[in-house]
Length: 343
Image 1: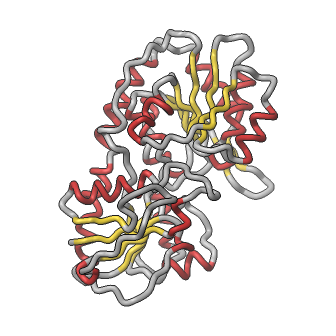
Image 2 (image 1 turned 90 degrees about the horizontal axis):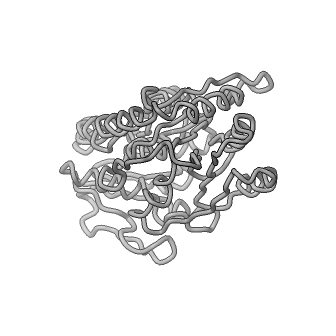
């Protein structure tokens, strides 16, 4: 079986600014396929998001085409000898007609979580399966941490926005701590509008550090994003996968995680704490219980003797359950059926 992994060209940028160049998960799923005996080649194998050039295999009829990323950017044209599928890491949402039309052109859709799979199955006319998103063990490995050192650092990583619970993390931190030697680091791969807004709103709170950090060397991400932290704060209101969570757990970082969405099948509370959710009456959407988040941050700081055990559990749990190997092994027979026209 051979797969040509395509990506809509606009997926390579984030608002015109490079984040990591080609998305990390795009490269990682290609590598994972190849490690499991599936020949998978990239549409953009070299360069960054500015310099990269498209690669089209000369024997294209031997390949299944897999589109990655935003379905609105998939340029699907039939026929394909061995089928065409889509892989999107969208969270569970009500799909608009553009998404539905694009996805229904595929032979099958793959998503990154069970909750997204169930959501999309009810909206699409094509089969929906799951490729469980993972992390790369050679890149994210266990770090020995001194949990008694000061300052104690909470990390909130990923693109700062409403969906990630970025504002709630700041509000909860301010509620939880008055004079303790503790910091919250908001680390974003770009100065998003919310990043700038929160930086202004919390300018009085010197213990909240706003760090705009683009990392071009992916092997440096463990040092640039995770090494200095003692606890991950991940109060996202919705994820199709939530890449930062398995990466952080793999490094032995205990976590405080919202009890919703893809985190329900990714997180184990023996590695930290769940945060309660509440329903907003105006639109029925879930939101983070900021008071409970503040309580869990306070508990993490004042339970530092428990954190080494949580850290070792987090790393072992991630290695056993959250790598790309799990997802590829589960989906390989499904892809083979589609490739052979047996779907």
